[in-house]
Image (cartoon, rainbow over all chains, first blue to last red; front, side, top):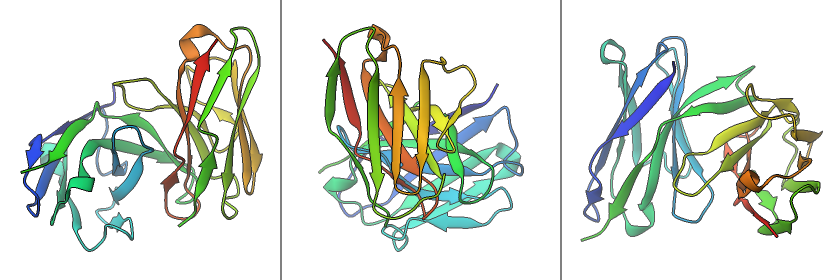
Length: 121
Length: 105
C-alpha cells in the first residue's frame, strides 16, 4: 500500500537550515509527484513545493528563495532543505503524494504522519 | 495568491445537515478539494475536483460548486464528523483555507 514517512530533526536553531527526508513505498517516484506541505499549530496547511515525477521542481513563490527539493529514486526518497529558519517556520511538516487529472486539478490523496519541527534557541 | 475564505466554526446536532463554505478570491474552476483533519492526525482527502467523492469516504459527504464558491455538505452529520475541514485549490499554484471547525451539540 502507499506509504510516506517524514524524518528529520525536531529542533532547529534560528537562522539555520532544515533538512527533511520523505521515504515512500507502494509507488514509484518516477510515476508520481511528491509535495511538501507544512502546518503551523492551529492554522491551515501551506503548500511548500513539489518534486515532479520527471525530476522537475516547483516552489511556493513565498518560499522559493529559501527552499530546495531533491530526490534519490534508488532509495525512494525526496528531500527538503530550507535555510534561514525563523520561529514562524515552526510547525508540522508533511510529505504527500500528488494525484490528479492535470496540473491544475491536483489533490493530495496520501499524506505522511508528519514531523514536528520547532525553531528555537 | 488565491485566498480561500472559510467560516471559522460551526455547531450542529447529530442527524442534521451541515454545509461548509469556501470562497476563492479568484476563479479556480473545479480545482477545489476538501479535507478532514482530526486532532493529532494528518488531513484526509474527502472530495476532489469540487464534487468527486474519494474512494472509501461515506456518501454522507458531498461537494459542489465551481468558479469562486464551493460547498462541502455532510448529511446526516454523525458524532465522528467532529473535526476541522479545509478546502484547497490547485488552479492557481496551491493554497488552503484556514479551516472550519465542526462541533456537535
